[in-house]
Image (cartoon, rainbow, N blue to C red; front, side, top):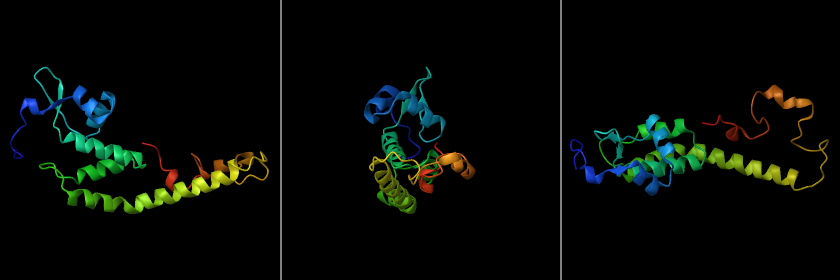
Amino acid sequence: MTSDEKPRADQLLTIGELTQRSGLAASALRFYEREGLICATRTSGGQRRYERAVLRRLAFIRAARSVGLSLDEVRDAMDRLPAARTPTKADWTGISRSWSRRLDEQIDALTALRDKLDSCIGCGCLSLARCRISNAEDRAAQAGPGAAYLPPALRRPAQ
């Protein structure tokens, strides 16, 4: 099929079929559509229909979100994918390379969090006076909103 051709109706997925195939809720699909991450066509009755290639995009979104990337980061990556053809391995490689530093930061931050929590929670001393992450007199408030003692990569705003 060329970029000018439209898929036949029997090649399109309903929202129910897409939820079944992707494992995502219909509300998530509608949200991703509103956010411009996926596209749907409409039948004359207003029902959504999705091209099968949307499954690949949804898998990509799920993978990116599961490693902590924001919707803005996902959107930026999706904007670099070709609209007129199925993305190639080279397209995906370019995106994954651009995320490499971001993922390394995330891994380092999660490792630091794990190591700090293990020494604090695992000790069982219950002594807040000696705890490394104790927040006596709310000193952390001076650092601004959020969990000030988390590594910076884990303090990014939730999206």
